Figure 1 (cartoon, rainbow, N blue to C red):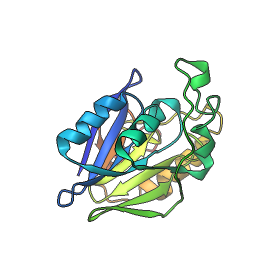
Figure 2: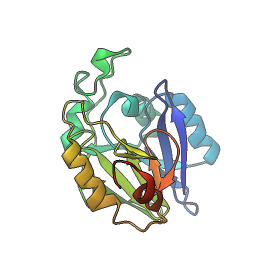
Figure 3: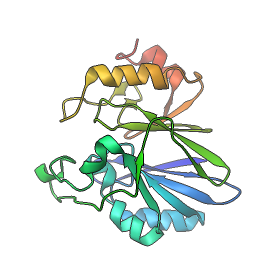
Length: 205
């Protein structure tokens, strides 16, 4: 199961991925409002084992430390974005308020890595371009694409570490090869499907 809610002033989508049978779960991209996310977890009666990050920009990591303390979960981010947790200039919060400096990650994610929550599997897909270490998370119920692929658009690549060429390559090689009916849960905005983006996304057609 995948459920999402926007959090923070930037409206970044935070997702819960969980196993219905065991109630084990992962929180993906807790960008802000840690107590709100924590209450959401409690309402669902979930046991969160991982806090996973699609990338290290401030609007996707702001509640990581708070939730780690509340949930006792392991934090995972791709190695290429790992320093963004601890460096406010790299995560861009230096240029806005409040400044965000988190503890180092417990796990460094890599392409093709498989994590399990209960009976569910989460596969890490390296999709750099929005940031050096951007990843997407593939599950049986869809792919969580972070700020790589949106409904009708793609992530911006003008931040430090961004690359339009890399982003489009990652989308083509890792995401568009998925079945057309695969749901896509982006870092901002509404969900879509792989098939829809193949047909109508102006950056891909």
